[in-house]
Structures are given as structure tokens and as C-alpha cells.
Image (cartoon, one colour):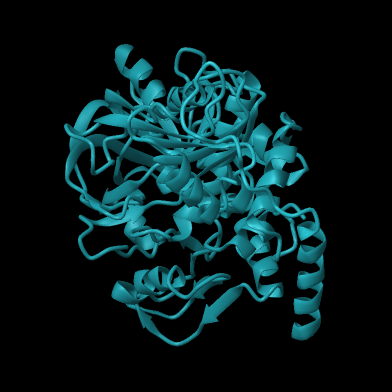
Length: 476
């Protein structure tokens, strides 16, 4: 099932027992963020949360953790809730290969029901804002999709970017936005500022789950998030035209904010509790001026708690990082079998591969670090053989413990680029990177003693099926 908006997705979560409606009155701070934080601490299958009785707000509707479990992620993709992580990623890859699917333009978007312009805009009246962590420097929009265009080619649909960037609400119509240098919006802004111009943007809040996944996915510069969303949802993605900018935006959004990133203007933004599990300090960031707001009557405000993993962002970013890295590596190295980059935006990646010749696995690891996403995120790579499942951590730990000799299996690359939010970088944005080769050497690399591996007994597969059947019968 393809969801056209957040509300239809929430209805599906509810039908599958994955939406918890909390009717008792709660405090905006700390209850909302603490409840979302708790979903990452209660085990597998955490539900989405919906609040509509928040102290201090007269008419707030707040959704949290909508993608914060593998069950919810499966429902977002129209799969049964019990679909395994590996199966979800395999299906993600299969649908990826159907790209591009052209979007469908629709009239009468729900966000067009109400509008506010210019000096009449007050985001504090429209949005029920609250802090996510007690050390945050202010209120944040952290699950909104931001639409921007290449100012040197503004009519190019493919170069129009949809990305997710954190934004601090700093005034009635003023935001601070962090354009990470390796993301497309930073390229758009750089081109605009070279021309002495502001960069028009549209911020969309309360979106369907697939465009949220796409906003978090590192596509190529000229790959359309809307066309990839169509591939993932297996149906044309619905878009509409934003009234002020003329940009293409999700048809089903709850709220859209149109404005500009003001050229060559920077102000202190932050701190903010990050996906790394650490606070980022205050930094000079861009300033956004909002010129028009359009919103659905009684909008649902969606926010994302992030902090010490795992939280919702890890489910959101996991497959969206694994699959692009896998596709890019597989295109150049058909020997690559699987990529697990689900840890902290892919700062750590585990890659299984066959080998053509000695040193091949390390070359694949190095290439992972030089993909568009890897340049800023992939800090450490663990390379494993094709018979090791990178999603099976006991197998990975066995490969690390039994096949790695630090004398020759560690490749350290000094002074490489990484996103500034990596707390281990020094100075911020620069780090050494590491490839750990936990594969079996092949000629001409003849090291170690790997000639007599222990294999599963021939009857083991039959016994796996038999044991699972016996366990299922016992549970019934």
C-alpha cells in the first residue's frame, strides 16, 4: 500500500497495533521527548506515539517515532510488519532497481487549506514546538524535508533536491539551518552565494514515510528523490506546486514553509543533541527567512527524537544508507555481496565481498569511503568474506577475532574528510579513517593459515528447518 500522507500511514500503523495514542495530559517538556526516547529502550517493535493533550497547547497533535522500529519501517514500505530486516533491505534493493518512476502532479493539496504571509507569520502559533534534549539550544524542526534547486539550472527536475536537515526555530519567521558540506543543499547554497543571491527553499513538515526515507537517502546529485520515492512505493509519487516558489513539493504534507536561505549571512546555531549520541556545540550556520506558510487545518506536527542510539533516526537512516552504498559498490565491484551501514549514519560500515586477487577487499573498503556518502560519513570499514553475513554480528565478531592480524590487516588513512558532527574528528571535519580487512587472503597475498575451514555439516540446513518448525508448534 502506498501512503499519500502522514495520516494514512498513521492509520495503517494503528490497524497493525503499532500506534499508541496517549490521551492523558502530558507536559511538552520533558514528557514528549522522554516518551520518544523511551521507545528505543523498550525492545523490538516499539510503536509510534500520538499525543493530543499537551499542557500549554490548546490544540496540538504531535506524532513521534512513526518509523522507530523494523515493524513500522516494514509497514511504511507496504510489507507485513514481521518482515525481517534482511528481507526489508533486499526488497528495498529490488525496488531501487525500478528507478525512475515519474511522479504524479495533483491539485488541491491538503496543505493549501490555510495560508499566512510575510510579517503575519508566527511559527510559534502554528507549530507546537518543544525541546528534544535538555541541552538543546532551542526548538528544532528535525524531520522536515527541505526542497531546493540548483540556481544555475533551476528548471532541472533531477537537480532539485529533497533532504532532511536540522533547523532551529529562532524567531517568528526565522530559522537556523545546518547545510552539511557534503549534502546537495550546500552545493546549491554555494552556487547561489557565488552569484550574490539568496537560495529559495521550501520546508515541508508532516510527510508520508517514503519521502521522509528519501530525504535521508544519499542519492546522486542528479537523481530525483520523487522518482526514487515512486520506485520504493511502487506507484507514482504525488507532488504539488508550492505557491510562492513554484517548487515541487509533496502533495500530502501537513505544513509547508516557503522562504530563502539568506546569502552570506551566518548566525550562531545550537547546541543540539545529535545522532552520534553527543551534543554538537554552537556553530555559525545559515539563516532562513520564511515568507509564506501554508498548512492543513489542525495539522499533525511530526518530530524525531535523536540521541544515544538506537533511536528512530537509526531505523530511518539504516536501510537508506545500506542500499545506496551497496548499489554504488555493486556497480563497480560485482563481487560485493552485502553492505551493513546501519550504525550512526554509516560512520561504520561492514561489507562482505568475494575477492578477485590479493588486496581486493581493501580496495573495496577504500572505494566505500570515496562514494558521495562515504566521503563525509564512512569512517571505518570492516571487510568480511562472502560467507559472512554482515548483518549477523556474531559472525562478524568471529571474522574480526579469527582473521585479523593487526600487522597487515589494518589500513589507516590520515587526515580524511568527515562530517563536522563526528565527535571523534579533530579538528572538526577531519579524521583518520580505518579499513579492517577480516577476509581470507587470496593469491598473491599469502598470509595466515586458512586452508582448513570448518564447514556446517551437510544435514544442518534440514535441522534448521526442523527446529524452527518444532519451535513454531510449541508457541502455537
